[in-house]
Length: 245
Image 1 (tube, one colour):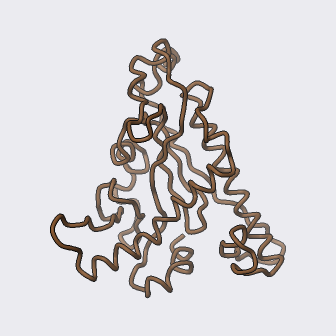
Image 2 (tube, one colour):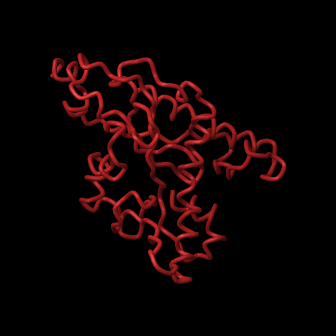
């Protein structure tokens, strides 16, 4: 993962920004307003920023905009930082499971730590120093992969553009399926670009990813999308979740 980021963006970073293994961000998937029969506090799913009911998903992607990890157990009103702190991935990272030489990149909504690199905030009076401004620029080139991945995902799977007409506890399975299908599409585009021998200028957006390196005759598989397998809390699952428990 780190080699992919370094190969794709290393020239722009001048070799001074290394160790990135993923870019993380949150996205709101629209849903219909949950009924009070299914959930005790349906207003918690309302996102004030986008003026809709939804579920806050946390996603991490690689340098080729392929999804590596997805978690969606937070209502739409929850902040990205709080939603990420409640995931199993955050727990593992806080336990030091990621070597110190590696990190993931996130925007200013996340808490800066050894494993989470965020940009320097803009000062109220004055401007950032040249070194900090350069760091923010290099950081943004890595972080924009996840925003680009969201754009391609929503543009290809239009079912995600409108509120999903299914119970909110089933949205996670639908969204993860779309992410896995998106990974397959990207991998096949890479294979087609490698077979045709077309570069970025000739292949356009569909061929803009670095070709997958594989031995002759070996088919490259898309990365596994890891789901948050922890059971959703009762506050999220609502009435039916407590009934099944």
